[in-house]
Length: 268
Image (cartoon, rainbow, N blue to C red):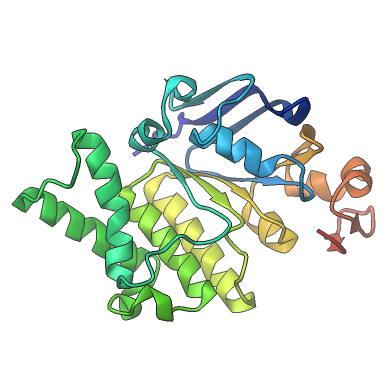
């Protein structure tokens, strides 16, 4: 488990496509045992930043560390082994497998990395560890009643919970969550917030999430970063964000009173 002094550090990150800067000299810190938000309009550079941190693309410059491990020189697979997990805007489940088997994939993929082998070692200890990690993740994400259901039969909201459980089974110390509330109704969003908060409290997991649902972000995150056109234009607490005229004017169409009360999202 990550100690409270650990977490993700990004320094002077730049991502370019051709001559354009998708991410322009961005630095941020996301500690262990805390949920932080990364928000901004479509095209602001949020997914490009996630792709660079998770190793899916090579940045033009910058440094990234997880618990003092230098991610910059690691492949995407080695970053996962080091403890960095990632979810995507669309859940990537295997539709023909059960919920339990989809969750177990999280443990198996990371175990392969630990062993540097081509497949999961099918020994008794490995099977017990996989089963225990899978059961714990199903319980933590309240999915026990769906364990034997085929993934293809799930609602979009249920698939989000399975995706989170799969990351829990892998035991990642830090999670990058890309639009985790997308496709959730109000009740599911509240449940997802509760489960994610429980994961952070129980496991000391660090989380950086990208999300357009401002109520979700402001209700869950202790600290928020705002990107616009690849640049960091704001960082601070939700209360400070609500009072920021620069944020209100520069991105997402947030409008509302300036007295610290919650703004209304009028666009994405």
